[in-house]
Image 1 (cartoon, rainbow, N blue to C red):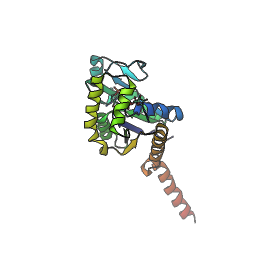
Image 2: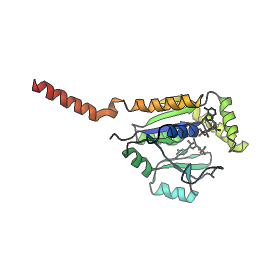
Image 3: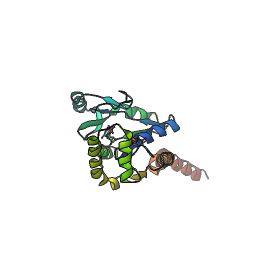
Image 4: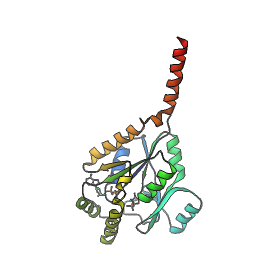
Length: 210
Ligand code: ADP
Ligand code: 5GP
């Protein structure tokens, strides 16, 4: 079985990444694995420890960094966020494509460490719509929304550095595009080296046998 791909999904807070991931996992059970990050931010209403995030203290997080337990980590609007390594490797070995829903600094660390990773940026159709979605989510204060919009201005500078840009206009269409995009990555010739080696061997044997 082929090893699963590492798929980084970044985008402005409120673009709809979490909603897209949830829908993708629902539609294609067993195909994808969503990495659960550690964070020092407070849980939002409805979020559960170990499901949306591992909610940890700053001390615990710094301990994870010191013990090299994270494949990337970053500070985002006053809190730490990071990806624990164990789960990612286990799922990839089991052939599942692992989704990392992480911000820009983490995405750049992943690209350095895993050059084969695919980096996808998700944007809403426009800035006003982003504000509407952030406010509509109802999970942040006005102040936190403003901080996230300010961070979006900085993140927008890096949109071109990603391999792909997905516009999350209609949710279902966008989820299908994401699925097709990842399926396409499996067809890259460098993802099919065992087939290439076998084909070469068979061709040689065929020609020599004649
Ligand atoms: P992110 O994970 O990128 O911060 P969320 O998934 O929490 O964003 O989505 C932010 C808000 O936008 C949520 O209230 C969600 O229901 C809404 N939303 C997500 N995708 C769409 C879409 N395609 N059209 C309209 N609203 C959306
Ligand atoms: P939120 O607080 O809205 O859940 O997430 C804030 C930002 O942190 C989002 O851009 C999200 O993608 C990012 N994020 C979540 N987990 C991680 C992680 O493990 N590493 C990094 N670098 N960013 C993360």
